[in-house]
Image (tube, rainbow, N blue to C red):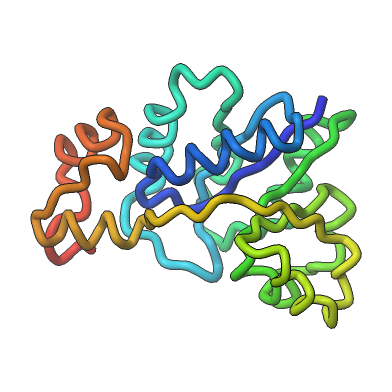
Length: 195
């Protein structure tokens, strides 16, 4: 099989994430997209507990037959490095072709990741790009030839925007699936002071 990994803090998951997953699955003819909520990302702060973020993703993808979820990064007090996640995933799917999605804004950062040169042994890295011309800016990277670029439509939703709206008691209608909004409100997530 061929499948893609969409990792992230999903803090919270939003409709943009679901559109990305659907777009990539169709464009690359993948069997499914595996959502992996981040455990303890070394380069990013998270605001909701892991279990809340996991549960929101699970709710959001329910009914999406080409989407699955993994708790491979659960219960980690130490930093959860992408390399370790890819190694564990490859062990679970040894005969499958794995595609790992990354935003264009993170391409240059790969060289700062833990043992980054090993990453490309375990998955094909797909850069989600908004501009076909932008790839020329990355030609200086020693791993440029390991990257596959995929042009995708612009998505104007971000988790930080949703958190800010919630903190200000503004609407998040149309930004997240209704089941996720209900979960957020029921569990009082991202209230003022919690971002």
